[in-house]
Length: 126
Image (cartoon, rainbow, N blue to C red):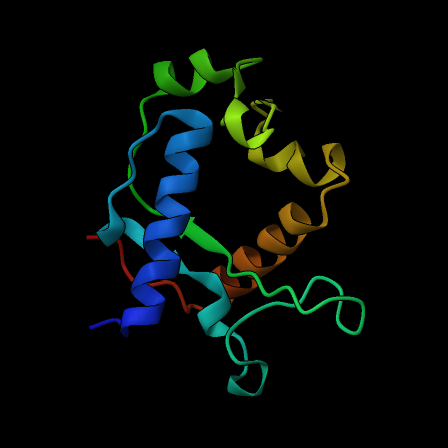
């Protein structure tokens, strides 16, 4: 069972995806990729160590989202306007993603996923 603090982080991730895309994720289909890091890291990633104290977790969703739902997201403007968010969704094939983004969090997520997959660390999909 997840510790209370971890449950909060997982639920926050699910809520963010819902707010930004409208997609409802199931908590049971989430995998914390940062949990595979060496315990000395605390299982979190620091995007700018020494520059700020921000910590982030990176999750993989192993559930299914229909192609029609993903297709409808292309170019959609999302986010919570009352919080100053304006997000424009770009749907990109996974194999091309690493070349089409300058977002360090996305590049980190790709690296964590590929290393976990290559190392046989990902749990079997149920």
